[in-house]
Structures are given as C-alpha cells and as structure tokens.
Image 1: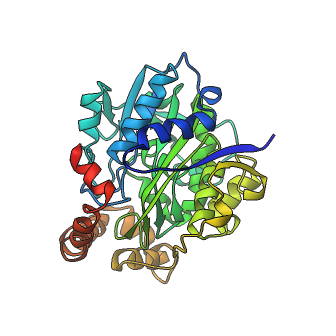
Image 2 (image 1 turned 60 degrees about the vertical axis):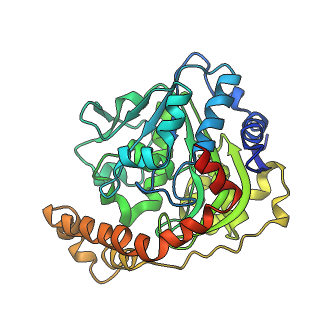
Image 3 (image 1 turned 180 degrees about the vertical axis):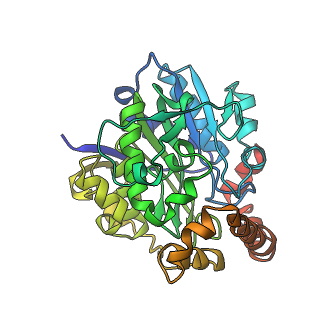
Length: 358
C-alpha cells in the first residue's frame, strides 16, 4: 500500500479547518496511539519572528484543535533552543506561548536543567551517531513512549537543501552538542529517524507552507507566499513531497535517499499517494546553492580546507567564537539591515495580518 501524503491549499481565514482536513486525510487517527500523550514538536530556528523561519501560531493552534477533535487530549508542547537561539524568547516572539496559554496546553523547554537526559541504546545499527557520541546517545526522557507531531515550516537549508519533517527532530532529540554532527548531517537525520521509530508510539508531521523560505535558510531567507499545508506520517515522504514542490529532485537530496534506501520511508514521489493539490503542476523554483557569510565559513570547516581543525574549532571552548560570529552576523547585521525590511513587507500579507491578531 502506498504512503499517503496530503497537500492542501489554504488561506488565512480557513487555515484551521484546512489543517484538520489535511491531517485527517493523511490518517492521523491510524498513526497515533490514543492512550499515549501527544507531543507537539515546535520548531524555533530564530528567537525573533521571521517569515517561514519557525512554527507559526496558526499552525500550532490548528494542530492542537485537530488533535483534540480526534480525541487526543493529553498534549504537551515541546520547545528547544540551539547554541545561538534562545527558546524562551523565541516562543514569545513567535507567539507560541500565546496559543499555548489560550488553549491551555502545557509546554516544556528541553534546554532547561530540569530535563532528564537518558542514554538510548538503538536496536538497529546507526550510520554515525554512535561514533560521534561513543559515550552514549543522550535523548530527553520525556520524549520516550509518546506520540509526536512535528510542526516545521517549508524552507531551504544551507546544509541539507531543505529542512522539514526529518530535521525537526534534530533540535529535540540531540543536546547542545548537536553541532558536532553537522559534517555528517545527512546521516545524522537518518539516524534520528531510526531512533524516533524506536521511541515514539507514533510520528506525524504537518508542514506550514503558507509563507515559505528560499535561500540560505533556516534564517537569512527570502519569503514567498505559497499557501500550502503538507501532512503525513511517513517523514521521508513528507520531505520528498516538499522537496518536489520546491523544485528539487527528492532522491538527489542525500538524507532522503539514504532514508529511502534504508527502508525508513518513501523518498520516491512516484511511489507516494498524494491527495489534494496536483504537485506535478507546482514548482516553486527554489535554490539550494546560496550561502551566508556564516554558512560559508562553517562549510570551510566541515567540508573544506579547515576540516583538520574541526575538532579544535568546534569541540573545545574555542567554539564560542563561532557562536559569537553567528549572532553578530544574523542578529546584528542581517536582521537589522536586510531582514527587518522583509518582515515589514510580510506584515502586509494575509499571513502577516493574521500573525498580528495573535
């Protein structure tokens, strides 16, 4: 039986209903265990609001209402930051906490000291994570034995071409040393999907493609109004469909190809049952070969002439220079002189007006 993925056209007035129709059509009932708690894995790629960068408030609201409509009432919203992103500030600026408070959904920040991290011993052979973390792969205990709904946005990424369902686990499952895996990021995403299938009672994704991001994501992007929702349980297929819509060949993206080859999901769109919009008629013509000054420098370390210095530069206290440089570039330069103008432009769209209503 073919994997089912829903691609749904939407607008700011009907998004809540459209998202429920999308998730229902992709079989949310069949893929979650109603007896278990359901986690809403929020994506925060920047502590500031920027279009297409992080989970949208309407996406989070729609997910909560749809889940409750299907009888999944035990919900927990899950946030995480990065070494350069403050999750609490991000949850506030992206209005996630507004939605959680309004709908009485508790949240947790995995970065807080109260989070208990435990060693996971994979049942299946991994590609790289056991080698990167030979002392053990630590994951948050709170994630184990739960359903998880990933809430990414449709955007490109400087390291992985696209970032969607599979990469949304990168922030939740790995701790503050996750940047150690960037040089083998594609293999890491495959390993994380292997782990997800072992620890979760169900995995599902609903991607917000209302304002989609093109360029050197996940932050310094150009947004485009696209008005789509992509839903499904097969994380590989969800990403493959999103990649095809963006204009990429899904099987040429390494992590999709690897996951498909390993039988973790379907990366070949010809083998996916897609209902809703006809994706053969959609091509966003997004680009994958753009860099920021920050990502250009990182690539020199991960795959370029500075590779021999990777351990010294990124796995010792010297790494603080990289965090400082990233914040200086993105927060002090790019957002101030380029990004804020694009944000003001986005506020004039139907989605910007909806954002302001939260």
